[in-house]
Image (cartoon, rainbow, N blue to C red):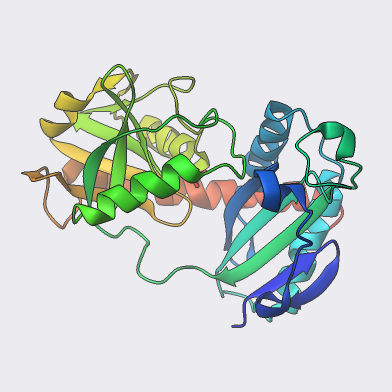
Length: 298
Ligand SMILES: Cc1ncc(COP(=O)(O)O)c(C=O)c1O
């Protein structure tokens, strides 16, 4: 399938899509975004993603211009234009920038708007789903509040680059207090003594949609969840370690730096969580359909 985009409502192949150089997203990362995937051809976990987009916009003093219905309609139109058929699963990125400014100045006085809305539709990256990975512990550089999914991802870009240089697939960020927070585009969870330990919201991480589906799955699977800060040293002694994110879903971590944690195969607790996660996701997809029909769109 060709990668396809909508830029301010104009549908175009991704290769032809452009934004003006005075776009504030391009100049200053003055933008927010969401990444979601489709399930059965429809946007998955729409409500939590749109809520997070609004939360992120609030976090950069921006009131989302387009309504939820307008955004969903544009996502569906772009999926359709991309030739996505039933059962073809897609990666969807929604970007809202503060729009084209009248000058390359950070001053909001020059941000005359309107906001620019971009929807990108591509194939889901191959081989990422549930793929085992090695992580490297990396001190997180200062950046924007990780709870806000703004265009300002440079600390994550550099964290991942450092991890790759050290032969790992991803980084595990460590904050100034020596606590692990999250990976470059995923949340982290450790299994210890049959419990699932996960850093709490508000401790320097993005409130992952997959993270909350995992916590629902844990409740169903009878796995006790403990939301607590996790010292870097503690992840080295975890029985099982996992990353969660929209594209990778639930991925077992096999190594932290040179320390082996698990095997290429998910451990027993992770396997139970994955089974419950599949059920939780099927239920979530039904809620999505209800949301879409309430919006009069599917
Ligand atoms: C920094 C960061 N943490 C966690 C996540 C996982 O979030 P989600 O499960 O909503 O994809 C992402 C996703 O892009 C991310 O960028």
